[in-house]
Length: 253
Image 1 (cartoon, rainbow, N blue to C red):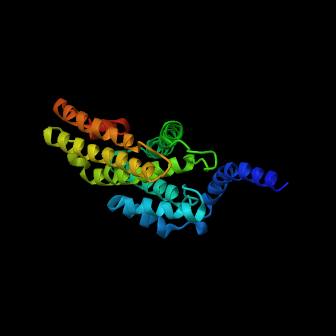
Image 2: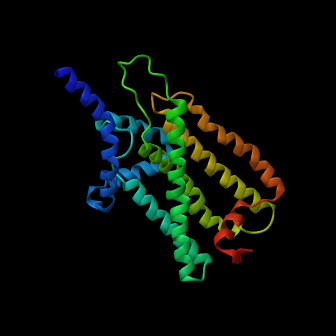
Image 3: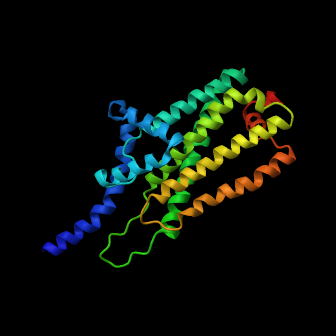
């Protein structure tokens, strides 16, 4: 009876845990008193300055909580609030309709961050589990898989520095960046190139820290594509700042 009980626990334990994490995670979104706000801001600061330190703490989290993903939704909540505030600032500067401003805030929050993040996380979760996991040497080793919630955490971590560059820094430079001429085109492309490249670098760090994945350098390949495309876009006169801003504020043209 003991081997049967042990094997049943082995089957149900690891597989049942991920199913119970997500509902608990969602319940904590509305409970501010259970969120570690100070640690979240610490993470946000170090993602911009020394991101490897953040993922070193991810290893400690795995050792103490037995899961790679955060069980605290504070990062997503605070990032959503900061993104909403930044979008409201853009609307105050460039929009003249309250109704349209509400539409812009909701669409940016959903499509720039949450929905796009869920799609990217799902792709990376599927790709890493099916193509990048190391082969288990024998049947006695516990098979590890990338948690979907961890893949979403990696996206959120990668998104925050990009948010700082493309929403905050960009806001203060926007009068220059949306102007006509070669200098605005150059500066806009450099800013976008740096933000997108750093996003993919943090994406790489997030998966490289997982000991059961191999060939994670594949997440750095998009940076090479960015560096190849950027000179072409600059020489063609394409201004990403004007293009993105015109999607929401057409009076800039």
